[in-house]
Image 1 (cartoon, rainbow over the protein chains, first blue to last red):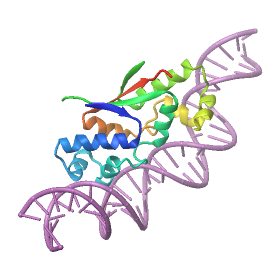
Image 2 (image 1 turned 60 degrees about the horizontal axis):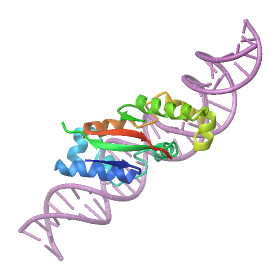
Image 3 (image 1 turned 90 degrees about the vertical axis):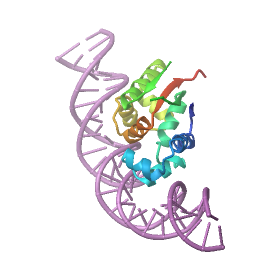
Image 4 (image 1 turned 180 degrees about the horizontal axis):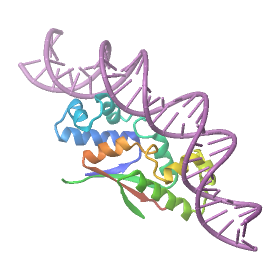
Length: 73
Length: 73
DNA sequence: GGGAATTATTACCGGGACGTAATAAGGAGC
DNA sequence: GCTCCTTATTACGTCCCGGTAATAATTCCC
């Protein structure tokens, strides 16, 4: 599964999808990743603060797009 | 031109390449993008502060890789 | 609807990011 | 070497990010 990441919302939806497919709660995943449940929640709901809106803007203006791709492990 | 973005260094090298191919100085590009020359410099030299090292770590642990791709305009 | 589990949001606080401005460090050409 | 142009780094101040902890809000199942 892969897609283009233009906004923080794209990022959030993708992370949400990965997590639910793994059948993990935010709290469980947060513990494993060493982050807070609050952070994961904001990440998944696309709060701009999580991924530098500035960086996305810069890349966009540079004509660079980001693609995320799930790697099979 | 495209590639995998695993580290802040990858990001920096990519931005540097785009900028030099456009024959722009950091100061010129910074003005156009609305960021500081200091920011661009740190971006290109891969200072961890610019792209959340935490976010890259989270994505990596989730089994997600980021790919950047230059779009022809 | 009621209750439990999960997620989203808030307040507060400490640390880090980024702006300006200045300065140091390279590099190119003479 | 010297000068000019460009890039990297520093000091300082401000603001945002993200942690903890608590509290809404939501979802799900009965």
